[in-house]
Amino acid sequence: MAQLHCYVPEEIARQAQRRATQSGLSLSRYLAELVKRDATSAADWPEGYFDLFGKWEGAPLERLPQGEFEERLTLK
Image 1 (spheres, rainbow, N blue to C red):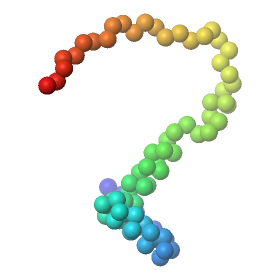
Image 2: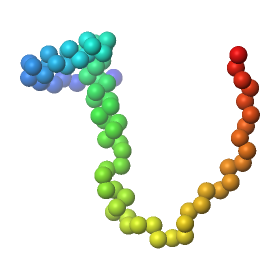
Image 3: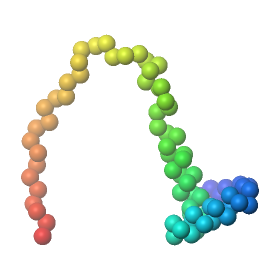
Image 4: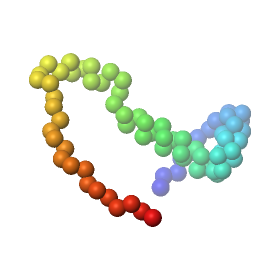
């Protein structure tokens, strides 16, 4: 696992520590979760991405029949 090092103003560090404590996490874990959340949200399609390809002008898309639902036993 990679280890990162960064500098932030003292007030930001205090706020981050306070938030981590409120969340029941260590500061390191709290910051790792923030970075992970931000990095994975960046994997979404960029705004306006599909506009680059124009509007669909073909025949309407239709969903094929899906068949019957399975029956499941009820848990007790």
